[in-house]
Image 1 (tube, one colour):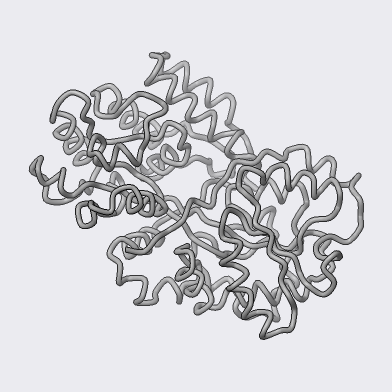
Image 2: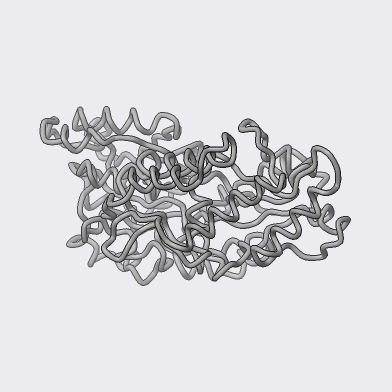
Length: 415
């Protein structure tokens, strides 16, 4: 089974950057210290693999690539410092939820007038959820798609079979029915697990119920029937004792031990399960999100952008063009198991060889990015999980809690 690494979404709060940018140094950013090389910031622990991938670009163009791996935990400080000093990279990997924040800080170079000579970067080459206008900010193209991530249902097929279910739940009603039967196995046994920190799950369930997180004018607005249906499901699972309530519950161990045989997570969970319990091979699988009105899921992942004052724009564009090639994207998948965003690469039969990966790819076809609001994670996501957790864990009044949440977030503009 192929490994897929962690979600490319990380919280970052750089609200002060936009105001401070004009006061920053105007020295050229990027790779001045590296001579002819361009500098690329890659997030997480894939720096060595990216160096191997970029070797082909160097061989093709003669331009060296200096790769700097930035731990997700250090991202905020790194970006803040770089904008303040005026010395960022040439190319930066950007989690989709962070993209509007970097745009608000004017940290990225507008690309609309620069992409014409790079056919691999044409919008039609990429998955619709992140192509072209889908991830433009303020009508500007500030990045191009790089890797994809999504959310699916992971389930223990052996545990479900023992409870009389020969297939994973395909609808919300079936999800509740199955979870109820699994929780009835005995004390300390549950049917499902909700990560209390995961703000994307309530948004995905709102979409699946026919609701939205923004109104027709492009402002954050959760006050709709789909959101209420999501709250019904979320709170109902807790009220019926179908999910654990402790905030430090270990989702991997809960899944491995069978205490919580179902949960929604990203493909990165597969690697954690394989490492923790290789003996469970063949006893678990991924399935599409259970359906309400539909089974819309999350399109997460990363784009690539060029730093606003890079002195090596042409070389950086050539690198983005190289990385957008379907074969290069598949090579990256082989190295680190991060899914492509190029349509041709996603359709490659090699990805379908693993049934779970086939589910991930199928799910991406009906997936959306979170609303492109600056500091989404702190301005909206954290408040959303705080409100829901207050209702289910502390007994807070549902309506007044949601009204307060609406008042805090309504009207925030999508860029």
